[in-house]
Amino acid sequence: MNDTPPADYLTHFALLHTRDLDESRQVMGELWGKHEVAIKGHIPFETIVNHVEIGQTGLTFVRCPTPLRVRCTLGGDRFTVLLHEEGRSLHQINAESTVAGPGSAVIVVPGQDVRMDSEAVRLLALEYPTTRVEQALRIRGLPSARFEQWARHRDLTSPAGAALRSLAQWAARELNQPDTPLASGPTAEHLEQTLFSLFLDCLAEPFPSAAPPDPMLGRIKLSDCEHWIAANLQESLSVDTLATLVGVSPRAVQLAFRHYHHCTPMAFVRRARLHSIRQELLARGEVTTVTEVAMKFRFFHMGHFADAYRREFGERPAETVRRLHRQRVPGSAHPTD
Image (cartoon, rainbow, N blue to C red; front, side, top):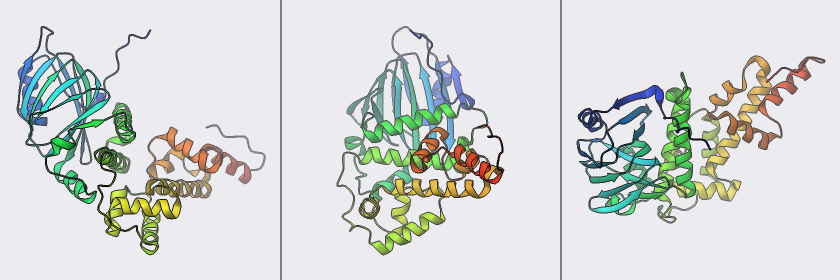
């Protein structure tokens, strides 16, 4: 049996490590709003908080082995998604009760009266600008009023919930690495957009018919969309981006790609990126590295990229480069991976 405690996340982005409750109140008040905190039981107080900004998204790790009772009116201008790794918390949001734990997320928004009764916890939190979320809700045809009644709780075992939690965990682990490209630049932008899209998918799961009743995107507009995708494969793309581009709902874009291409819009984008990567590898050969080209086209998880490339072309990207080298230099030794 392995009794090694799980490693902390975001260790290169330390914000707070304290046993002083007053210091914690001050720092966390600046991050999430002024609040009242009381210790439950007799476990001495301690907390660790690490925090990083990825574009418009905040990612926070909290480890607090001390059971607490917290009350606050959430400040700031961000929606906050609490993803528990360990422990559970009972939340009352504007008098509506819900429980957060490893299988369920709680979402809180500015201005809400929040009371939290927590066990010892380890959690990740994602924070998104309120105006960005509200605009996305309108585009997707989702309600924005009385948010705590329909969106305060989300199932993390659902497809979108599990994907959001998994990507947040992976990102927080990768950000432990020094000089990681996930902290800034194009790769960080793509990560941030993907996290936001998955968050919106979580919100939309209970509303399969919530999108405005736009007709399916016509073939001419879809062609314009395809040309725009081809010209912007190195940019951050999402279904919402495509919908805004052609002036329809995300649902209309999804229907059109499923009808004409038998796949989702993002599967179409991923396949186009894979083909562009292959073309660049064949053109440049050993002049470049596979990782360099993959990240240029927004693949930031090399294992997932290599699997997708092999499924599409029947060989690993390194094998493409090796084969090209053998063709250009007959009798040459095989370069190592």
